[in-house]
Length: 190
Image 1 (cartoon, rainbow, N blue to C red):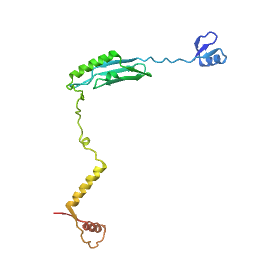
Image 2: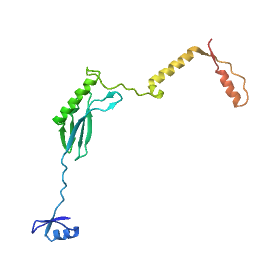
Image 3: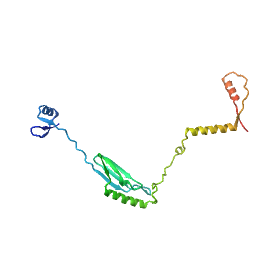
Image 4: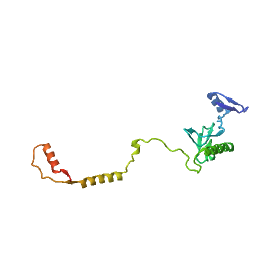
C-alpha cells in the first residue's frame, strides 16, 4: 500500500498492516494510486475497395483507436465516407484532411472505372440462387380462406347431393356406418 509520510512528504510502498499502523498513529496518510487515462490515438486510412470477380467495390475509410479499441470501416456509393465522425475515448473526431484527400482521389478513380455515371445504384446485381421453398410466397389467412371458399364453391357447382332413403336396420357398428354413408352419397353431375 502506498502512503505519504507527514514528516518528509515522501511516498513509500509498505505492507497494508504497517500502513494502517502509520496512519493510525498520525505519521502518514494514505495515497490512492492514480490510474493513467489513456491518450486518444485514433488513426485513419483510406483504402481502395475490395474486388470480387470483375467488380470493384468503392473505396473505404478505416479507423482504429489503440487507446479504447474502437475500430471500423466506412464506405459509400456516393463518395461521402470521408465525412465520417467517430466517437471514441469520450470525444468525437472527423477524418483528417490528408486522409480525406486520399479517399476522394480513390473515389474519383473508382467512379471513372464504373459503367454508370448518372449517380444511380452502382452495386452489382444479386445473383444468389433461391430455393424452391423460398420462392413460394406465404399466404395470409384471408387469402387461404378465400382460396378454400373458391375451391368448395367449384366443387358444389360441379356436383349435386342426392338423399337416398334410409336403409333397413342391420346389426353392428359396420352396418350403421355403411347406412350413414349410403344416405349421403354424392354423385357427380354429368
